[in-house]
Structures are given as C-alpha cells and as structure tokens.
Amino acid sequence: MRVRCLVTIFAITILSGLVGAQSPAAERLTFEVASIKRNVSGDQGSQIRVQPGGQIVVTNNSLFNLIRNAYGTQRFEMVPGPQLPPWIDSDRWDIIAKPPADAPQREEQMQLRLRSLLEDRFKLDARREVREMPIYALVVARSDGQLGPKIKRSGDECGPAAAKARAAGEAAPPVPPFVFCGTRANPNGTVSMRGVPLSNFVRNLGGMTGRFVIDKTGLAGPFDLDLQWTPDQALGAGGALTDGTSLFAAIQEQLGLRLEPQRAPVEVLVVNSAERPTED
Image (tube, rainbow, N blue to C red; front, top):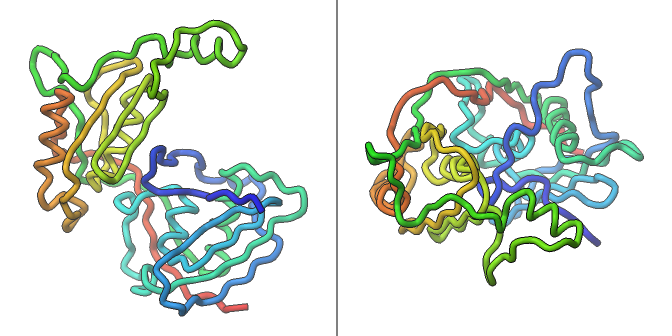
C-alpha cells in the first residue's frame, strides 16, 4: 500500500507558510470519523502517514509533534502558554482519522483537518501572534561584499529556462554528472544548494540554529553553495547553540556570510492550553 508522510520537520525542505488562518466565512475542514488511543508501548519510533483516500494514521506521536505538523512549525517557532500541561511532549497517541468521501487531499487541507481534530478532541487553544524574539540576521561578512570560496551565483544549468526545456524534451544546458538542482541538508553537517535563492538556505538555518533567521544579505538571484561543519553542538536554553563556533565559523569562512544575533518582531505560534482526549 502506498503511503506518504504528512510533514517532516527539519528536512531538506521545511514546510512554511502553506496554511494561513482560516477566514470566518471559510468552511471548517474536519475528519468524518477519528479514533484516538493512548500509546503506552514505550517505543521510541513514531510516524504520521497519509494513506490513499486521505486517511491519516498517527503512531506513537506526542501532542507537541502533532501541533508542529498541523501548523507546519519548528520547535523554536512555538511559545508555551502558562496553562500548557506538562504531558504535551511526553504522552504518546495513536490516531486513525478518515476524511469525508471524495474530500480534497492537498497537504494544506490535511493540515487544516488535523488542526480541527486537535481543537475538538484535545481542546487545543493555539493562536499565531507577532512577538519580538531573538533572531539571527544573515549578513555579508566583508565590507567589500566579497563572498567566500564555497558560494557562487548559479549558471544556466538549473535555471527556469533550462527546466522548461527539459520538461518539453528540448535541448538545454547539460547538468554535469552528480550535480542536482535544489537544496540538500543533512544532519551530519552538510548543506548543498544548486540554482535556488538564499531564502532556501535561510529556512534550513532556522532548524540548524534553533532561532528565526532573517536574510539581510541583499543578495538576489539563484546561488550554488556547499557548506560543511561539525554538528557536535547541543541546543541550549532559549534555542541558542551552546557552542556555535563550528557552524558559525563555517558560514563565515566558507560562504563569506555571518550570523548576527539581533531581536526582531516575528510570527510565533502561542500554544495556550490543551486537555487529554476521551479515548475511543
């Protein structure tokens, strides 16, 4: 049976901005039926899958992770409210939720149904708001604007004209062997990017640093880059790196860019309260 993951947090592409707040006039999307049971197996593995027909199968997931998937957020984007229960990140749940027949199955609609399920069954109270938070600003390190040896402006191999030509079966600038177009991030301490804007890199930096990262380089257009560092740091209090020199030094030495700690207004998800659901 073919299944697909609903959302993967901190992967090559991080889901962001797909789903905004539903307008009051919009139809509230819900599942037709849903079963929720506490998982007390003690297993470490967890899954969220979408099966053919749009049925969502959740195995051994915490409410915290379900919220992250439903809202497409990372941990540092979530702010706990004073009434948030301590079990939100420790209790594990199994859920089977089936949408109405012939319901649209686009990912953003799946997320909206999952939000409704959390509101109805877990009594989740969460809202987006803008707060001033610690962030990192990505800037050009040198005053003359010169970049590092591991970043350059992209050629034509991954450009939109080349992609269109390939899709049409026409001649296009050849992509050298073993070269891809897009972004690859690996937890072993490597990021490679071909033919995409720096905004892709900035999204990945948020997960690497545990903070919002804002692009203030002023660099437009697609870039190619390769970054390597030693990922032996642990995230400390407030999401800051306990020893961020390895990653930060690599960004400056290899890319000619720099992460500057600042404060700025950013949109966060405030999770106020939740309740354990009635199992069925």
